[in-house]
Length: 442
Ligand SMILES: Cc1cc2nc3c(=O)[nH]c(=O)nc-3n(C[C@H](O)[C@H](O)[C@H](O)COP(=O)(O)O)c2cc1C
Image 1 (cartoon, rainbow, N blue to C red):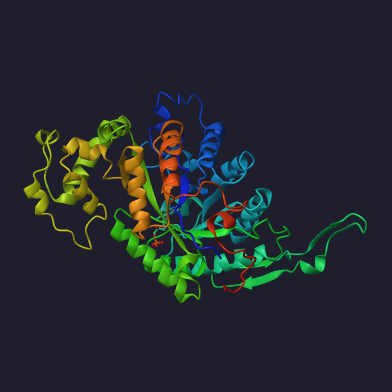
Image 2 (image 1 turned 60 degrees about the vertical axis):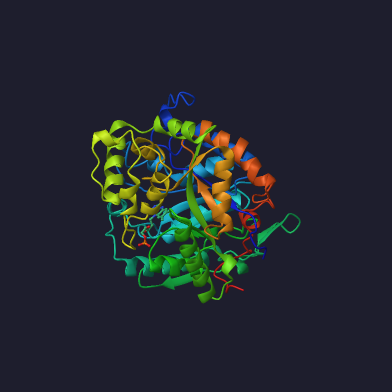
């Protein structure tokens, strides 16, 4: 198996026209209809031009869409979007989330294997448990405690992988002279009866070019890390500092070893929001146009909350007093974004500009020129805080274009990102070994 020596890049696919809730309002986008699959296809083609390894689709079914809580495409089924995109791209992979708490393993096995076969080996299933009560309600199930959520996830994943292998690797014959389509002796039913999951029968779909889809995972708890150690090829995570990245990456590597795997068999992907401009000031001002008044005030309040400082409107246009910053104590129970808030605040930005740096957001922002952003990513990568990134540009058409045209060439020139795809399948491109079924790991 090849070891990943260069960073992995992935494009987050959650929004109407980009990762910002307000991406659709950008004058360059002029979104006149929604949904519009052309936006997704364009983003995929851009990402493929930038040699991104894969696109990453979350899935939060049942959630009420709103400008500030849920991004617009979460209502759309990402499997459907990915299936169309796969027909308009050739190399880029797709990691798609389906939660084990409310999905059915046969559906998951069938849909992913279908798409994997049709896309010639470019699919991954992001096997999350899902901790969202609204989604659970939408499917008419109760959200179980972590122990049962993960208990089910193990059985679910075993069932999916077993179903994938019910069609023997050499079963397909397509012999025109004997008119033998397949050797059906090699198509063997499973019969699984677990505590949480049952499935009997076959999934008659031949292997894809990469055998079967990869397994991704996202989560945060100890149960999540242990699950990932057994099954995940890629862990897509959420961290704000290099130290947090190092800790979770190491925990994942240890969990892989505990399951008889090699540490490099699991790749940790951290989120990053690139705020790109000709300088830092321009970069944050571009981002600021997507922050409405309500969100702005909420973020001021949240910064005050994590720092333990009561701000007034008079504080907005000046830097936070360094003496106050020095009094802030970081504990294991602090908001995980606190250290990043402190770091950026100490650069001397005004409180308003601190908000524009997106220090209170779902993921950390890398702010500045293309070189600044490349440096940020390289620093994390070289520190062992991440094997790669899921990139969240505000607007695909503008910010992803700039990222692909400006940041990617720097990373390539510096040698930390590949210049072309290594192979045709997602496994080849990520350096993940061929797998078919629930076979024992090497
Ligand atoms: C980066 C990331 C992405 C996630 N994406 C999804 C998702 O798309 N759909 C979903 O239901 N849950 C998603 N989750 C939530 C996980 O399913 C998980 O249940 C949650 O993080 C709680 O962690 P735990 O299961 O380890 O307790 C995501 C979590 C993380 C960290």
